[in-house]
Image 1 (cartoon, one colour):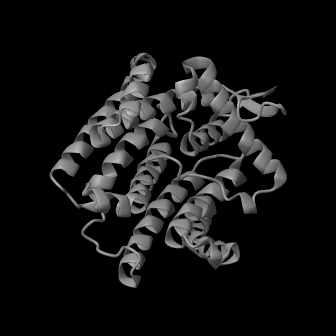
Image 2 (cartoon, one colour):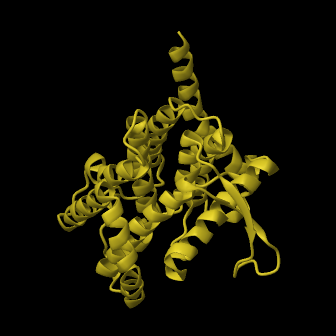
Length: 306
């Protein structure tokens, strides 16, 4: 249920992409240094986005270092390091442990159970440090299992469970910005859950597993696709509105790249798995999807000025 909040590389300037990679590599290094190689394997783009967002909002002192790593043993890579990345790494452990346990319960894969056992000590440490976030994650994942067991197909309720715990994960500090961050986390959490359900629908049908969209039939039929697309756009429009209310200047264009186009790249790839259709067509599609949310956020900013 990770990896949907990513940049659109084609639309980033070289300088912006360098900054983004420094946060991604910095989070990777942070996970290894503080929690070991198993935690490092849990690295994902969604928590990289959170680190960028919180860095832009709170502007902690950021240190830039250069290190080699196993995937890139020859050339040193620039890596960012700050308190927001520490927090993102902690939340990565919190979410990854629960994801591994979820995979074990669903698929009974021993590798997931073993990895969860290795992370258990780190998880307990993070849970003690951030009880609000840990309690929300545990509670809503428990409710999510119950909804799946009862075969519930209420989109707002089921996807909202992921939204509820990601809302608390996004709130690093309980201050004047917590409600905007909570709203971002809530709607992005719903978006992530729905994207994950879309990506897994064929696999879940094959194995007879629960999927929120299993009653929809062909999700890519014109009628169903339009309905699902509108739901996803509503989620990202609400998240983008909350972002635009935050006083973020640092890395703001990278964050906008993610919110208005990056998040749609995987959706379009799922919709058009045939690579022969060409990158240019997919590029036009995610640009069209992003325009609606960007237009709405522009309207919000103009209203704030009046």
